[in-house]
Image 1 (tube, rainbow, N blue to C red):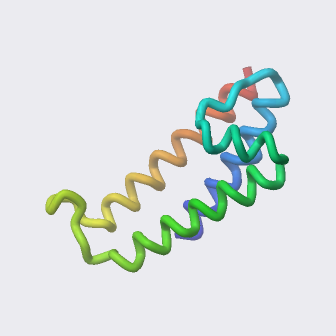
Image 2 (spheres, helix red, strand yellow):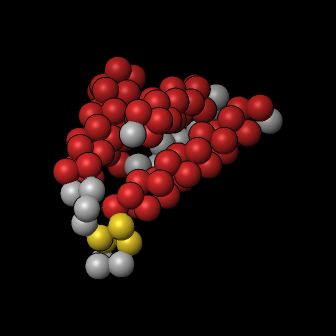
Length: 94
């Protein structure tokens, strides 16, 4: 779960860099936090990630839609974050 938190932090930092280069934040909640400050954006993003992970870990033995074990959902989240950060790095490199 630490990996997901670290990737969330990387996502926030890379997002700020993409925005500095002319990108746009499409998530309305994150855009609202950005309007407050970069620090509010980073702290808000990390807080949401940590709270959601805590809730997921409390329910680790549950199944989503009675099909997907929470452990698999968390693994998919980790893989999605890896893909997102890779995409952001690709954007910044180009």
